[in-house]
Image 1 (cartoon, rainbow, N blue to C red):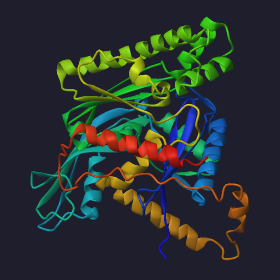
Image 2: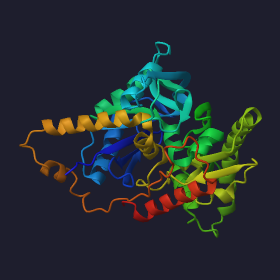
Image 3: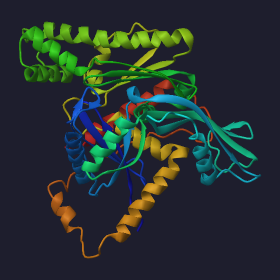
Image 4: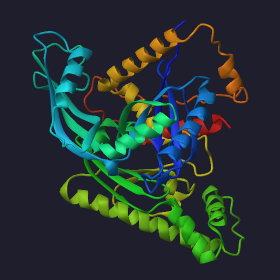
Length: 435
């Protein structure tokens, strides 16, 4: 019987740490876990030991849900830490077809770019594949003389990356690879046409709101502002003269739509929240308009609990932009079991992207090798005892999002279809979520 493997995506935020597990044999099966962050201050690592402890907790929660020990993860890197470098890869075919070997050779050649001694490569974004100068969406199996691709290398400061590795080492977790949180989110929120024609992805978190402009399958621009859901909490605490804890609970009640409109302070609470939402979105609007002047933006997609935790966000904010603005409910601020956009998106991207197959194959090979080395005297009883209170829970069955034809370079299906599928996905998830 073939053993099922899981790709684990880990997203470390300033307020929450989120982990998602996606099956390598059934891409409709995904579960996630979430815990409060420790050792983080406004997206900077200030206590490696505390961060390692929090990572260990979220991994243990996820282990209980998939009934499997987790030894390695793929880690999201946030865009504000990154620099982007244009690159290209090449491999000779000599009349043969493109295989994983040629793809790996080309990827190795693409990393031979001078990036400076203080930075480290954390990901590669591939824009276009070519065989003998003809563009292919999926070049594998295509015969020719030369295989090439164009793209970007993403780099981050070594000091930051080393802290991440140290924190996960304390949690006894290996980093199998790193990837852009934006690419993860974009893999499930944007179509191929969006990546080509131009779109802005907005991640609204607890302390930070990030905006990323993508076009021609590249990361064109990144910007962030230190504003998020926690600013709304502080606003409520100051104006209403209540504690931050009380303000947070008040915000959650309003976000869920459970705050009684008969409440004496209801109108004031709504005005306070709307004012901060408008400020956050004004940052997004300026970022979008900047790129409308120099390029092309067809769509804005907003995700993250800072804004999308509000059930009525579409009614609370009226866009000044003359283009589609979509709010995707993802990190529900009151639920620690909701599948998250970035950690799950990274796992999904790794399984669906052609150039990531080598990394997944290596992960599976190492896992199977470790299993062979495990002593036969050790049974599964220890693991079952460790998570005995977790078993018997219903797992989440998530609708498969991948409907793109891999043989086409550009998929121009209608915008409404992808968002309908995202809505169906989240409805299915919330109906079946593990409590």
